[in-house]
Length: 246
Image (cartoon, rainbow, N blue to C red):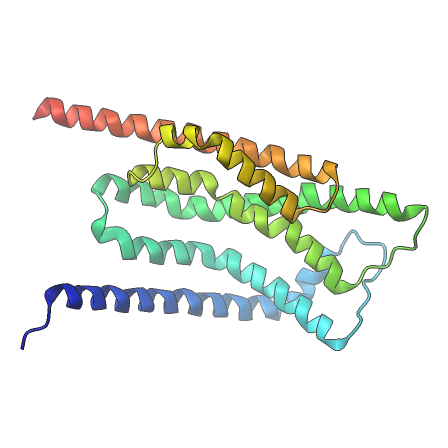
């Protein structure tokens, strides 16, 4: 008895998805292992501006912070691999115009993630940390545990690496026809509301930190709308040229 061709097609897609997920996971593990070899050097670089050593409350804290540092480095390295694997999975169903856009999409994801991490680490994190230290200077003796310090650092950096991906994702979804500037403009109020919630969630409970985070997120959304407009107009122009030729 012959199997249903649709069922065979679904099974084939699932097998391919599993294969690409495994490749991405293997790339993550290899990157994490490589980062772990140099994790003490990375740790020293991240703490180069600290005047005091961080406090360890238990042996597991040391393992935790080294694993976290290695994991974040591995995520940064794996993003282009994951983007490539996703692209190869959806490529057969994508138009030639969208395929050309992927050439820019994959490196753009990595660059924007690095920009987001850099914004969080070099601008937001020291600013908020200094603000917190100034608040505690007169009334408290500050002593940071390694786990609390790096948890705070991760909250100030990693979310921005992900949020800074917004323009590239919007560009690609517009190319695929899933988004357009009209939809993005109509969703502006809701998007701003969600971004405010995200900003308040990932920052310490003070208005200064919230403002420092909210403003770049709003700018990212507006940049995403502008990019979507450019891509959308180019697509309309190509469609009009094709219609005129036919």
